[in-house]
Length: 224
Image (cartoon, rainbow, N blue to C red):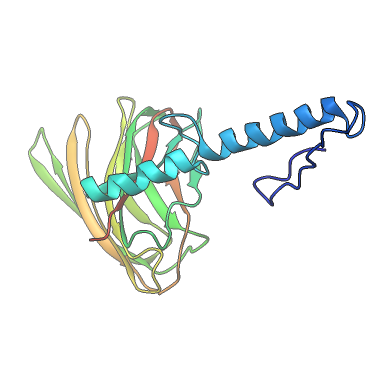
C-alpha cells in the first residue's frame, strides 16, 4: 500500500513469529515502511529547507520572529519581458504590516512600477514626489480613486521599489509608503486604499513596456 501520511495516519500490519515471508508479504512490509519514512522526511524537511510546508522551514520562521523584526515570507523571480507579476499568499493573519522590495532586473524602457491588491482596480489614492538629480528639480503627482498605486520605477539599469504596507490582510483601510531610486531620480510616496477588504495577494504591473529579471521579496513584521 502507498502511505497515507501526512493526510492521515497509516495502519501497518505487524507480522508474528509464526507468519511466513509471503503472508503478510515481507517485501510489501519493507515497501510500506520505506514509503512512510520518505513521507516523514518530506514533512520534517532537510536542514535549512526552503519548502514552506516542511517543519524545518516553519520552525525557522518562528525562531526568526524571536530574533528579528522582519521575517522573510517569499521571493518571486520576475520572468522575461513580462508586464505583470502576481504574488499569491503574500498576506495572512501572521503579520499586520509588510515590506515589499523589488530589485535587480531591468525595464525595456523607463517605466513606473504599480501595485494592485487582489482583484481590486478602484479606490487607490496616492501622492508622489520625484527629485531629479541633474536639474535639480522636483515633480509632484497625485491621484484620487485610481486603479492602483505607483510604488517604484524601472529602466534599462534596474527595477527599484521599497514598499511599506500596513493592514492588507486586516479588515481595515490599507495604507502604504514607498521609496525608490534609479540613475536619474529619487522618489517617495504614499497613499490609501478606500476599502476594508482582506487581501492575500498582490500584482505588480508596468505603466508601459515590460520588465525582465529581478526579484520581489515579501517580508512580514513580527508581532511583539
